[in-house]
Image 1 (spheres, rainbow, N blue to C red):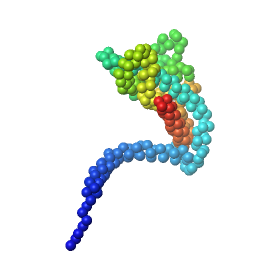
Image 2: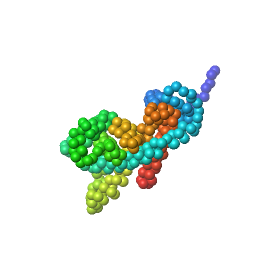
Image 3: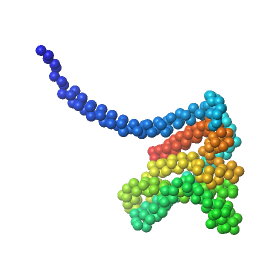
Image 4: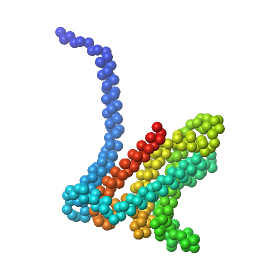
Length: 305
């Protein structure tokens, strides 16, 4: 006669719970698989290819390929436009970031209250964000043209230019970016402002705080996560600037508005036709972006603590 020990009720309950957990885990992996495939196919594999190109001879056209590390990085740093492009990119990043954050926060404070007039203003400020950057650059290219622009006669009488000098080209291009992205950053700031509890403002008014004190002691500290996000987005986008300068200035006048990403394009497809050196420049830009973003997040976290 087959005599079996009775199953322990606790073990049976554990096995019963393990099955739903296993199913949920499998279902989670199935949900995550498309995203994982997307990341691997469009980020991980291209990144590995860029790293391989950065340490190899990789001409644009036919030619010998082989490992030549670290020659590509030496050529990238020694390029005649490398230092100037880095300095110009940093200058443009600082200017664009300060203006976008200040204007985005100012517009958000302006339309913070819910009303029909403020709703119209929000839509008006956000409309330029719906336009592609290349399309906006072409629009401003015509606006800045000394021949087709409706502002050309006025600018000629004032003796001013939009793109004929390094300073004018920087300011004109920055104005385009501020016009294009101010509404987008306004929305981000507005979301952060609306997340601040109204009770905090009421308590500040009860304590007799002025508007400036409320803004400095209440709004800015509670808005720090939003400021961290917008700063990272703005700095990253500015460091990777390409379309606006390629369309408006072509790097001129006298190669004074060549950004780092534009230099990568020039090295890869116009100047040396060397994808290896261009890949080395891309790796340098990637490392710089990671370091800059890490420093920004660390700074915001230290201020919050």
